Image 1 (spheres, rainbow, N blue to C red):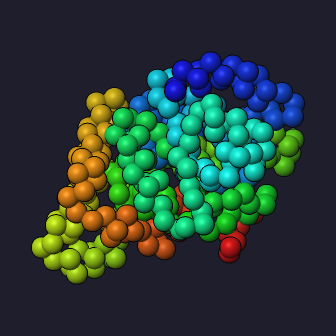
Image 2: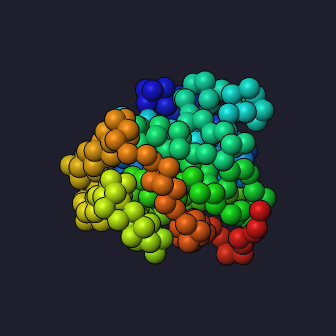
Amino acid sequence: MWWRYVVLRIPFALVARSSKYDLKVSGRENVPKYGPFIVVSNHQSSADIIAIALALKPALVHRHLWPWAKKEIETGAEGLLGKMLWKVFGVIPIDRSGGDNSEAIRLSLKYLRRGELVLVFPEGTRSKPGEVKPFQFGVANLARAAPAPILPVAVYRREEDGGVQVNIGKLFTLPPKRRMYEVLEELGEKAEGRFIQQVETLRQWADTVPRDRRGMKLIARMIHIITDFVSRKDIPFDVFFRLAEEEDNEYIRDRVMELLPPGWKKVRA
């Protein structure tokens, strides 16, 4: 579906340059030319995804961007623009009522193994200007399940002229956390524990891989190994899909907060 983005990029770019939006991008040099990687951003409006897609132009020449989106968007609950983006580009559907994001993670792993991009708005809904709501566990669980790097992005309206600003940070991965080792200790020599340890080893190895074409292909192969286990269902993944902890959400949110203007604040749900 990447070709649809290429075709529609021209009219979207023209609209983005209009006085109403006046899109500006900072940090585009941080965008890898090759996937796979996970994009995380704060959420301000339905136009965020278009602004981010335009900002990620270097990576979307031959790769597709798959956003997580609540199922209601398909029915037009978020307006015509959201429904159009759902139909034209495709999304990873999220059922916010059930609280289970395992299927979204499975689909994300499928696309990441292809070397594509996954976009998540971890707040789960839009926030007021100047505020960033708590990040939900979905993206942190995905980051724990896949050795793919994370690209932080901030999008907002500039105070001085009302234009849209997109700031792009540097790639990062989640550091090892206490709960992971506690889970591994509880599982002992069970298959789940051995697999989780293998995934963590792959993630640490991925941190040392160059972000060039060859390096990102290696990361895609690592994710391929994980998805093979998932598809064969050799082990139950209830534990594996819930390895994230609150500190992970805050770690990711802090990387996005660093890209926002001074005065922006974290708020509670």
